[in-house]
Image (cartoon, rainbow, N blue to C red; front, side, top):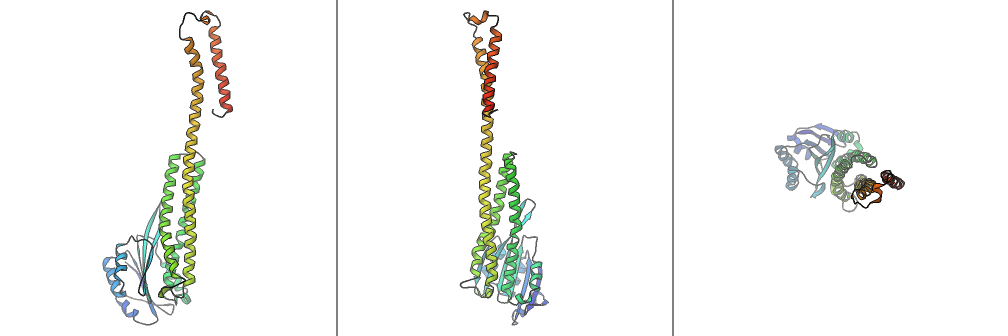
Length: 321
């Protein structure tokens, strides 16, 4: 579905144009065309490929989708793939944005995403002095918007992890805690897969040999790179914290089991003492002097009570009971 098809000149919007007019404006000096598609059909991709004369390998990747984040250079054209990570209830939905960037055009195609980039277009149109840089600035603005959307997702994951850590030390539902930590680790991995490859790719857009469409935009792409570095460092730290939390939760389960074992052993000892004494007197041998003694029964019960009292006091002192 076509979202926008706009031509710009000298940093200002010139007009909304039809798709069939794209090639004619591409031939005009000092102008560039910015087209945005959503869930593009095969026919739309074929038409855009013809209008912009896109590289067939890049078009094939955009058609099939499910690419890893990357930036590939084809002569004067850049093909960029970004992952858009959006909350969907308790899960994370991963969409994809494919961006074709040439000297005088930008074609963005987003798939499986709810949130669009109309705000990015508005921001660019409000900064004509930067929009004069042309397609390179638009590529930066789109990448910056995608990367900035990672931070709220990261904050939500950190908040979720903090809640789970509180439940761990509250000794509540250890199995549920492990399952929750595993899902958090899945989310961290999903976000890591979106940011780590992109950091390596963005690093090639400033310093050294910079692609033609990105010339003059080095400090802007370096800013995106710095955000990605911060994201990846936070994700690495968060992943280590999740692993530690899982180990702590398992340790808490082991400690709880050992406490139960100690209590069971203590109660077993309390039962074993009277059982032993009763077993001795239950052997029914004739030559047992206490059997004919009037105080034999009270003495046996008293010994049982005394020994159990001593054991109970020792167990309580050792905090087994």
